[in-house]
Amino acid sequence: HVAIIMDGNGRWAKLRGKSRIEGHRRGRASVRAVVEMSRRLGIPYLSLYAFSAENWLRPKDEVSALMSLLEHYLTVEEPKMMRHGIRLLAIGDKDRLPSTVRCTLERTIEATKENKHLTVILALSYSGRSDIVRTVQEIAAKVKEGEYAPEDIDETLISAHTETGSLPDPDLLIRTSGEMRISNFFLWQIPYTELYVTPILWPDFRDKEYLQALTEFQRRQRRFGRTDEQIAKNIPRADRS
Image (cartoon, rainbow, N blue to C red):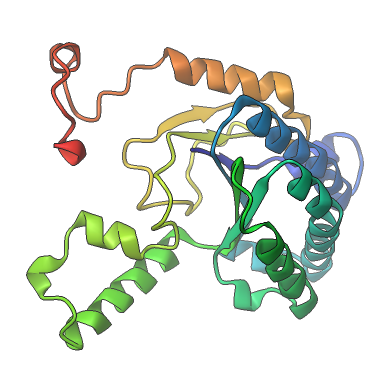
């Protein structure tokens, strides 16, 4: 499961004297490249942080353009998703999306739901903290109703109630543009996710850069809290005991 914080569209545009919207347009080609490469490599899950809950604070014309680009992307890419067996999911506060965008998103999710080769998860109007708050509220309501006892609450139960409950946690989180922060993305899901930060701005992140990130991931030894000696002896990690 590869997750990507797609950052740098605005800076890419500013460096070239172009509008921020042009940077977002250019970024669509990077999305297409990463999705296609993931499909070719057999990566089963790809999560893309497309629009955060905080992004609603951006200028209205930029938000409007981003929503239009999203709707156009979904419409254009749906036939390709069907041909290549790509399933689409979306997480986040989708009720805040414009109705036309939401309808297009729901249609694409429904059309691709039986596809098996790659699942692409779009994080739209997404907040990691909000996901945790909603999860706690949902579990608390079930405790009140008697479905769970307080002692039933553990990491497995919490994970199952997050928006990504049916998905494995990310193995690799890529962030473009060189910023060294998580930006409220997958706060519960990434305790042992490998992080890869590149100075490349998102519109310039294509096949070569993606393969570099994957190659670096393959070089790493994932300890999950264990020592080298424990790994050599194949002692299970704590969450797999």
